[in-house]
Image: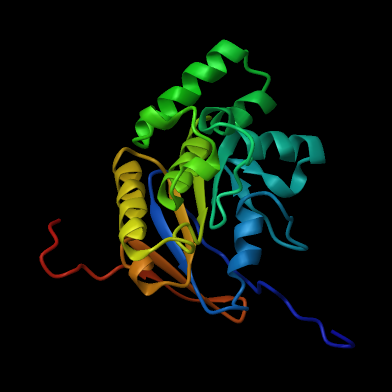
Length: 220
């Protein structure tokens, strides 16, 4: 900005292990979106290194980066990002289509993913025929269908009412319990509180990285 250089992220360093469930929180402008884009291989850092499943992302070509993103990352967005004219099952098939998987196998895997999120009876419905919670479940099924190393959820309940929010977070809890690695970006304290680990950002830096305090009545 003029003669001043602003670092969206400044000296951020952390590790997410396989099977972890992490919330990244912070106010608007804290660097959450930039960090999400870096973790999802949509942007590359101007300095430093990001290793995804052992690969140094900074060293990958554009084609290799796209392949790594398709192979390792599952995205869940606040706005669902579904194709309006396509059925639920065709939306879920998309990552497999980009991998070149045969149509019959794509259909089988997509149906399994929809069943996993409780939508086995909605596979032929289009987005406008589904509730907001059901659309987000379709988005989660699409993120899971290729069995990614990392599930990234960017404000996954931002467009949902409180009841549907609880349903989606319960689903994410269940996916974590099944062994999925999940990173949730959120500004909602109630969402972050459900994650065993919370990383707090402020002005592009990590100001806290700690386990979530145990809730009253919780069991170890």
